[in-house]
Length: 292
Ligand code: MLT
Ligand code: MN
Ligand code: ZN
Image (cartoon, rainbow, N blue to C red; front, side, top):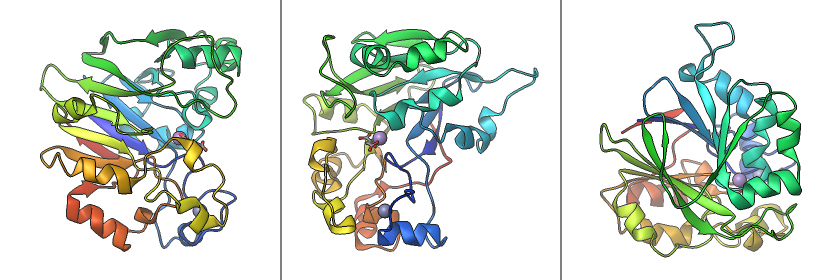
């Protein structure tokens, strides 16, 4: 299995268009590496690829990744579709860019498929260009070009635009990818509200865990921007709370992604970055390829 970290930040990216925090200022000046919004590309056979989440940055992410180059036919692409961890706009709006793509399949929890029809009708818009096969994920593993994929229930956190749903089930999932040919297991969990029940087993069985690193500390948005609005409601367990959990799994390759623009680990020379290095936890840049 191959996976590419196409985008490693939370909604807004780094730098964020309307943010003048010291980190965004340094990214704008080029002294820190810019990063695009959350996206992972994954493939079991090297020819068929799926995105996990699709942000408005997807056009430049695909263009920057040679593994996703179109061809050899004039309109052939290795991209087969996308899996959504949730219904957040920074994880779904990239579909508008992929409109008109032939034969795409989108997998998502039932709550998310419902929200994208009933509450923000992205699905009708997209289907007007080229019909997408919408597939609901549940607790049954499914096959994706030779990979076995399992959706892992994470939390009930709804996007701000979404009303409570008539559809039962979790709003947020993680995905576990198992390559039966190599035995490799990758877990992608960019939205973790708390350490869920049963997650220890998921991590123990993984070779590589990509985890929600949105915030380093619980009060970070307030200290960086002078306005704490909404950090607690965003449903992201801060690194100060998840790192002690990660320390219990030293043999797993552990990576933080979905970093918010206020997160001090965006600066490799910060004491917080040093703490992650000392714990053996990585914060790779956009474009990093993982092979399992
Ligand atoms: C999230 O996944 O929680 C988002 O990054 C929130 C946002 O888009 O502001
Ligand atoms: Mn996000
Ligand atoms: Zn900022």
